[in-house]
Image (cartoon, rainbow, N blue to C red; front, side, top):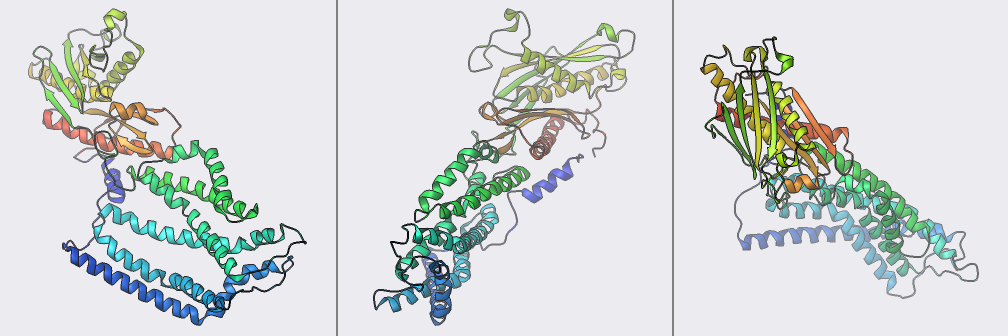
Length: 522
C-alpha cells in the first residue's frame, strides 16, 4: 500500500540509508596475507618518500628560500644582528638540507602514501564506515594544509614581535636550526588545530555532541579556544595565538552549521558504532509492536496493544444514545477516556476516583484520542448512537498516548464491524485507519518511538497523529530543553510519518480488509 509520504520517505532512505552497495572483495585473507599486504604498502610508501626527498634535495635552494622567506621578511627592519640566516656548526650545512628534503619529500609523497594506506584499510571497513571514511580523510588533509598555509603567512607577525620584544639593547641571532624547529612546530600546531571541524562532525556522528549542545555552550567553547591557542602556540607574543584563535572560532561556527545540516537530514548518526539507544534500536526503528484483538468478552470491540514495555487495553462500547447537541440530527458521536492503572508505573499512582477528578494530563490525552478517532468516522452512517473508547494503560514505558490512539483505532473498527454484522447500520461508519507515534531529538539524534528513558531526556519531544490518506491529524511538539528549528521539525515529521506507515501495516494485519483503504492509498 503506497501513501503520499511514501515516495519522500523512500527517497530519504535511498539518500541517507545505512547500506549502500559498494563492491569490495569479500575474499578472506590469512594473517600472512595481511602481513604481506602491509609490507607492500610500507615499501611503496617508503619508495615514494625517498623519491620525493631526492627531488626536494635537488631543489634545496628553492625550498630553502620558501622556508626562510618569513624569517628574512621579518629580519628587515628588526634589531637582529644580521638580515640573513646563519648556522653555527659545519655539519648543519648538510643536515638542514637533509631535514628539509625529508619534510618536503613526505609532503610530495603524501598522495601515494594516503592511497596505499587507504587500500590497506578499506577492506576492513563496513559499508557505512567506508561511506564516511574517505570524506573524513580528505577533509583532514585539506584542513591540515590550510592550517599550515595560514601559519606560514601569519608567521612574520609573530616573529617580528618576538624578535623586537626585548628592545634595541638585545639583538636576535637568526640561527637556521632553531628557526627550522620553530617553523615546523608552528606549522604542525596550526595544521592540527584546523582539524576542529573534522573532530566536531565525528563527535556528532558518534552521538557524543549535538549542534544544539554546542550552540548552548558557545561562549564557553570560544573561551576554551582562546585559552588553548595561548597554550599551544610557541612564543609569548599575542599575535600568534590571536591569529590561531580567530579562524578556530570561525571553523567552530561552520562546524556547527555543517553538523546541524548533516544530522537532521539523515535522521541517523554519521558513524555506526555500538548501540546508541537503551534498547539497542536504530534511530528510525520502532519498538516491537503487537496488537491482539477481542481480548475482552463484553465490549463490542477490544484490542490490547503492546509496544516495547508499554501495554494499553482499548475497549469500544456502543450505546444507543448521543450527547444533547447531537439529538435529532441523525448523527452519532465518538468519545474517549484514558486512565492509568495504579501500578502501571514504577511507583503506585493514586486512582482518579480517589482524587475526585481526572488529572490535567489525563484530560489532555483523552481529548487527543477522541479528536483523532472522530477524524475517521462517518457519523451519518453511525446514526444516533455513541461509541466510547476506553484506553487503560496496564504498563507504561513511554508513548502511552500514541499507543492508545493506534490501539483504539483497532477497537473502534471492530465495534463498527459488529454494528454492520448485526444489521444496526447499513455501511461501515469508519472510513480509514488512524495511528500515532512519538518522535524526538535525544543527544542530538532524531529518533522514533521514544521509550521512557529517552522521552525523559529528550531535547525535543513530539507526537504525530496521521491518517492513511496522508493527512496529518495533529502534531504536538515541545522543546523540552532547547528550541528546535524548521529543518528539525521537517525531519521529525518525515520520520514520524514513515513510522506511522509501519503501524498501519500492523493494524491491517490484525484487521484484514475490514476498513477500505484510505483515500489516495492503493
